[in-house]
Length: 471
Image (cartoon, rainbow, N blue to C red; front, side):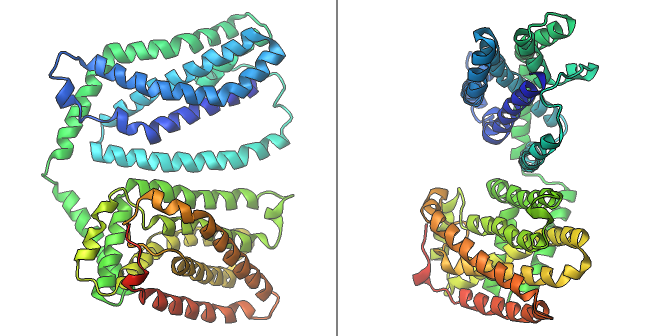
């Protein structure tokens, strides 16, 4: 049971760590209440402990819900004591993740500013989401090939460095039962380390943590910018303006292009909801293409991958109208905007150039490497058809101005929009597959597809105020 229990506790710890970083980073790193509470007879340890108790109570609920199945199975198979051990160690896993996450933040704060810290956390969330999805696709397929899942595992010295193995070894001590030096070390590490970590954090690191938060808060409020920062901002602005000049046709569309480009680069929630989706698409294609006895080995798979990836790009188009600061959208009504279609077209073009094109470059490079350079015509047609589907989805959906709507306002149209997108995706994809059997059919379809994109964009630019729904 050692290896299956290791997987169980690793899942609990990973889920708790991701929850801490994604949902509770604002609680841990919030310094706004320091100026109110700390001048009163409340020390930094009490304030930190209040935050930890608040966060840990939620993590206990998450750890308990994830481990209920394992607790029931272990209790039925090996007795109530083993089930109780799984319960206690699941809760201690959450406590250990609180300690390690705080140490992780403290180390980061020694080297980077608050603004950069939040950016690092955001990109860390994106990378971890992609890695977890890739692991979810890869590990089960790896286990199908291995027969050692339920076999006894020879313990190595490095097992003492892996926290999930501490928990698994402690439960294994009761399950087998086996009272020896190895299992006793696992038991001691599993019970002592989380509690000792919290004590050490509360005793020695809390004051330093609070001071760092205060220092970062003052640093973030400073209005003095360095010369290098100004130069990098000017360089980025120059590229944005250059792209806007290339791909837009009038000043209003150009302004919307630059506005969308900058907001999508600064809005952390937008990046968190769109970038992992693009990573999921790439991970899925790579993993499936190596399955020799699955759909990934078929001659049709590369076309499926090119079109299926379009769904992930449409998530970005769906999020284009969403913002936490949607109340600021009153500016659209007060500004002298006669043709809102120019704003919509400029925003959509920014999304295509900034997200869709780099994503398809990476995907196409892998498809051409994996299936041969003779698929270049299919890649070009799939990219153009993806633009057709993206603009069609924008035309068929309820039209909102960029970043003008709350998230909840769009949920009611999500199901119908998903079904419609799936239908269009299937029709276009199978039409492309049929063209592969016609000599030069794919090459001849590329100009027709490009012309369709141009016509749809012109139609989208004709959007009037009567077609706009203001959030």
